[in-house]
Image (cartoon, rainbow, N blue to C red):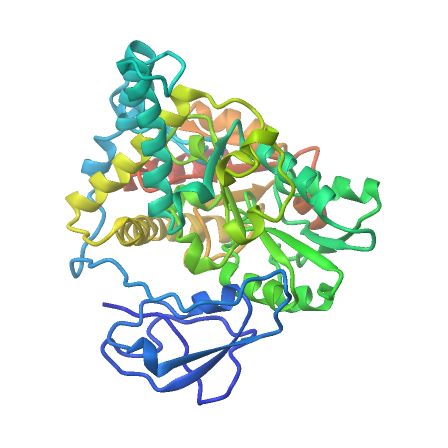
Length: 489
């Protein structure tokens, strides 16, 4: 079993250090002092198998009174069978789209815009509409069962993400959820307070926050490198001070593709007394995360991009959620999961989200992954990522070797998602149209990433060609894409 942590000599700070896998052997007993900033750095201590908690001292550093004192989180990674690889045939059998006659011969490479829906979600959605399409939570059977299924979705997904049930809620979309949160922060902050946003984001996670400048709050921009498109945590340090109340950034950009070090960034923000809001929309399709381990105060993603229905899923940790002003009905102010969801829920779609948990559990069981909900999801995440990286690297190599195009983001598969944007001499949409003639379903445009593309000098009128896939993509489909690119580029 692999444990993650970085242990320093007694009394030395780990502030600003990125955790690395394999920092010590399983079963090794520890006797060290870890000096951690408030909040997220406590999650740098991961899965300390064999380490006695009483031997590890945690000292809090740089705490603001509005941040809770960190706690030691000891989690064990799921047990994985050595050498296990993703069973792609089993995976694809869980998605009816691959059985659909009208889609035969076509390879889907616009998954970043929305994934195929897995079979358990479709079955639950259909059952709800057939049998339970009534107002939920009444005592008669159809209503009771409908409410129970909605609660099941919330309970199981929260457990998989390492948070309490009421720390997870559903909304119409991630964009709408973000706007509600922005209104809450506008009421929460004081004149002179500041927030930090990036220019790497999809507009949905930056536009609502930037509008707070119209109400007198300071908005600071953490800028990407114009050549690489990457965010440098050292640049964030220069923006942080006692005025900053919130740092908003993406787990993964929907055009750059690079995976940002959430735990490290969160630790920096928490050490300065700021909260963090992480846009996980572009990362969650590649594996659910343990929000408690990452340390994020807010984590947002979209169910329709993670094999489910069109819902926004929002995790808000209790320490922050109960401080922010209530945005729901006044009589729901005491319910954390209702404070930031003023709209009435789509009962059927919320209930169908339990099918996403069904699917993750099916993958875990089929591959022999054991443990609790968060541990099983961690193991599935690792299988997904390993499969994606193996398919992604040949595609990146092909694109990087072409002088006529510009590959956006890292050229190595490790550390990036299989969301690949390419800038060309002609509009991305035109190239996507050509690829469609060869059975490739891809997209072109700016993908609401006008700010990062503009910052990198990409002509936003032409946009980019975006090629995105997930764990259900097969090697044959990637080969089909590479052959089509040889013809169309």
